[in-house]
Image 1: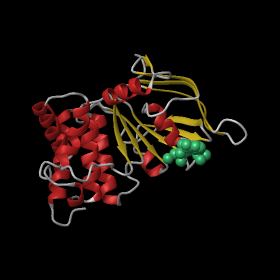
Image 2: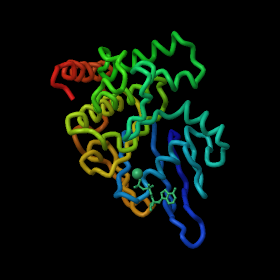
Image 3: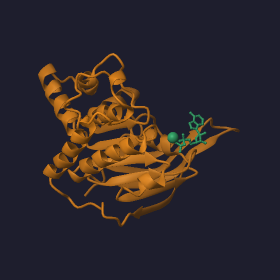
Length: 258
Ligand SMILES: Nc1ncnc2c1ncn2[C@@H]1O[C@H](COP(=O)(O)OP(=O)(O)O)[C@@H](O)[C@H]1O
Ligand SMILES: [Mg+2]
């Protein structure tokens, strides 16, 4: 099987010359469809730079990147944004929701860029919001939602178009512990239903929850290992995810919920 993500000797040098920073210094890695991977490292280790490469938000100084079999290392900005839109669902630390759109509008937004018709957009947005347990909050604006709920809208936005890769950069960085476990449970459930999930974190407790950990230091892969925990890939049914999310939904509809 071909890897979904494959990098070969990726380098990213900022400010080439005297004050150059080797943010990525020869990263070669492969991630296969259906994996749940945490990329972990200290602040400044190159995580966000790697995320920008994997997410086609930036191009490497040298090295090659194959996404779903296609060499994307030397594409133009327009080509990259098209690939990005089709292949990757992003989740960021800061949610990045549009304040004057309700939850449904936010989830629909990337579908508009895909040129999808209104009815189909609405159908996928509603489906995604239900999946993250926000069926009862679809008309709420971001300011009317808790941080944890806003991040679940962002997760719905990332998964609505069913991209092959979900890429999350410190998705729980701004959340309390309860909302953190909500988001991690949703990501685990998505993984169990067959999605490929890559989560970037500085937090070892979060990394331990993935099946595989890629540890980076000074722009290099320092370690790459499988976690042998109960959450290791088991290929469970779609229904199980719905049960998990449904429980979450009940929980979060309680008045004291975060
Ligand atoms: N745009 C930039 N220009 C110059 N240096 C940068 C830039 N972005 C990141 N860096 C440097 O590259 C290194 C890796 O940064 P980053 O990828 O943001 O690490 P992390 O996300 O792990 O904290 C750091 O030394 C950082 O200061
Ligand atoms: Mg970072």
